[in-house]
Length: 220
View (cartoon, rainbow, N blue to C red):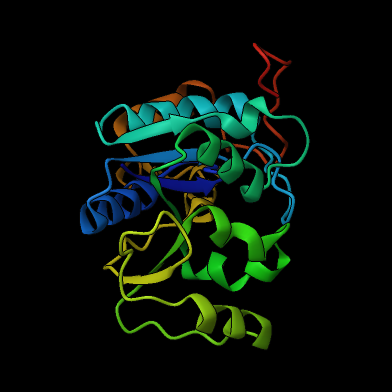
């Protein structure tokens, strides 16, 4: 079994996220892609939008695609949301499966700031999605790491390779969506219908204040 994991704060999840997940799923013939909500990221600022909102939107986006699953592993786990802990959990659940951690080039370049980042390849392949012709400078530590584990394909191993996929991407960002809504413009074309309806119904992103809710069913 080949399983993809695509982590993010998804604040909000937009069509660019969905397109990337589906494109990697098709390119690598993954059985399923788990869209892992980063509840409390340890290497970046915390999202303003409450987990309960981001989780509901993620479920709505994934419900439209049978190969995508909204995953709350990091919501249910206490403390900061570290990719290495999520991969340990998935490896325990799928000891013989091929696990693939999916990330964009921008995230890949920040890898040395991630917790226990050099051990990620012990549990999964790293799949780096880049725009066709995209070039990026990286520091020496990441470059050395890449040279050790770079591969043209997944092969048959369960983990251990860094594979780059050149895929046309949708030019959408969560920041763009938030700014459009806050300015009173419609971001409907950038989102799944259910996600846009949820944002509108819950009045999200219309102000710069955090959209927080009391704890609900363990979701913070």
